[in-house]
Length: 214
Image 1 (cartoon, rainbow, N blue to C red):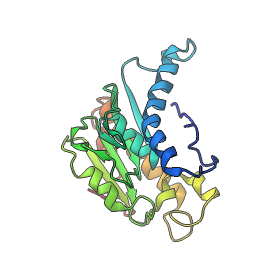
Image 2 (tube, one colour):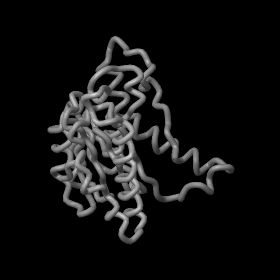
Image 3 (tube, rainbow, N blue to C red):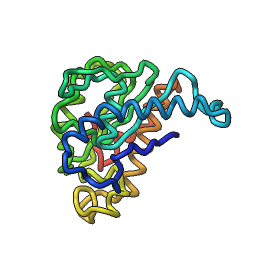
Image 4 (cartoon, helix red, strand yellow):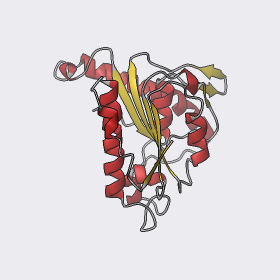
């Protein structure tokens, strides 16, 4: 697993006065950061053997979910017009509360990679309608949308609860340990399905009362 720290876009980075300009750059650069990180792994003599040369999966939370969808082929609308940042080597994506607050992602119907999206019914940062709008156009058969009934935004990224309150952090939300277990099992099921493991998708926790599946 490779997890690049996107420059100017970690929890600890200060917010620039010109937020919109920074975000415009990040929307373009984040998918490129991932492909660059993948290339670095392949080029590293010590790590190259750990990765397939023509196939990788992408997972991300919030802006990372946007990144995963863009890499899977969804068109990105920038100020200067639409761009395509997809990488044909992406063979599966997992998007946790994926962000598309300004409706800059279009064409998710073109995504052919097996896809798992997660969101929380109580998410106040990436509202459930946002995620449903991303999911609804998809037509490929291996797509799944899981909704944590008592999930908030930081339910999917517990480190956020060390910095913020609410929106997934607190007793009114599903316990973080349980949410992590449910999302991890689901992600592994989807990834093993993408790898061709028979019966993998049957491991989705479809009967868990904390989850609604669409």
